[in-house]
Amino acid sequence: MRKCKIYIAILPLLLFIMMPDAEAQRTRTVKTKRPERKLTDDQLLDLVQKQTFNYFWDGAEPISGLARERIHMDGNYPENDQDVVTTGGSGFGIMAILTGIHRGFITRDQGAERLTKIVRFLGKADRFHGAWPHWLYGPTGRVKPFGTKDNGGDLVESAFMAQALICTAQYFKDGNEKEQQLAQKADALWKEIDWNWYRNGNQNVLYWHWSPEYNWQMNFPVSGYNECLIMYVLAASSPTHSIPAEVYHQGWARNGAIKSDAEQLGYKVILNFNGEKGTVGPLFWAHYSYLGLNPKGLKDRYADYWELNRNQTLIHRQYALKNPKGFKGYGPDEWGFTASYSVNGYSAHTPSNDLGVISPTAALSSYPYTPEYSMQVIRHLYEDLGPKVWGKYGFYDAFSETASWYPRRYLAIDQGPEVVMIENGRSGLLWKLFMGSPDVQNGLKKLGFESPWLKK
Image 1 (cartoon, rainbow, N blue to C red):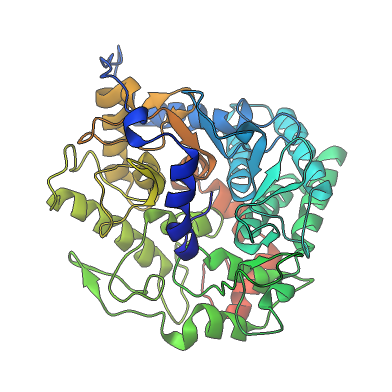
Image 2: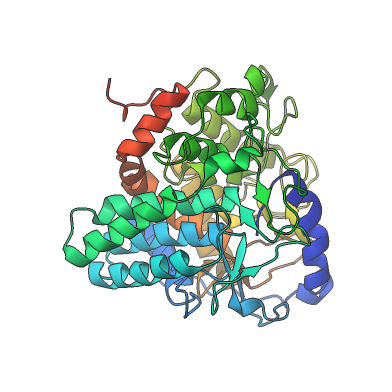
């Protein structure tokens, strides 16, 4: 399930049709059983990561090994939905598997075996000029249309997958013979993405979609700022289908118009979000591109990306502290707004689109930026709300205390960043892998970035 300008408009309708109404999702009040002993921060983080990791391990679609688009513990799915895997969410899941190896949730051999299965599947699955579609059928590898005209390549979802493949290649490149073969295959797959094709006739901008049936009719050139920075970085980093730097500066950065001098709630906004001056987007914009791309010390002519992401996170928290609409629960223990299930279908929650819904992934995946504040939320959710919001695969996707709404549902794109970003805050694992790639370093230099990872 993807989330940006066009999807923010489409998804509430799409998922409202596919899902039961909000009233049908309401659950009876659950008596919370408090933990018998208080876990240390490290113990609690271990538990949250492991439980959430299992979405991508035990909960994976069995034929492909990839992440199911959604898992509903209430068993209420759209028709044939349990066979559907998500490209971007599976990229997040691959990075969660690497985290699982690192944390000892699984052995290195188990992880390598699963990842080998995944890359073999990806190599045979439908691709369109190297790019995978948004959704695939796990048993067959054939495209499942995300919409009527969205039945071909999805460059943004493919970028999230490519980010994970680069981390996989880096992790196993010096391993045994089987691991080196895995690394080589993962490396080859991302290099087969034809980023230049998605310029739609050599324009200085990247397009989100292309379909063999509908060509460019989706007509979605991607300009910043949103979650798509990683797509431009990888397009510049590709040693096989690299884009000129002008595509980034003219298309993504809109010749500098991406910059903002606005402030919200005492914090600089820094970049215009989706071209809207002075506003901030949902918090997944501070997560998806930065699962591998390390924002610490990352700067270009437009922004300091650590300051950008930390400020966006703090704006969200400060808004919850002020709580202008008076929603129940909001405060230092409940904050953070992002795209998730909502009281009526699906919504990209932000301070300007506040529906009284808290999405745990927002604060949890912001752990590197605000570790103490994020830890407050984690501890409150686990210790105080307990089984209302906590289940087999970690914290459920969203809830609303005001509406007494506690759906027992998960989405891959929200679970994955929790595992990965918490790990980046703890050990920097995925940041080290991704930023250690010579291809990525070359791409960042090409676009004019500064980073401690870039050799002079």
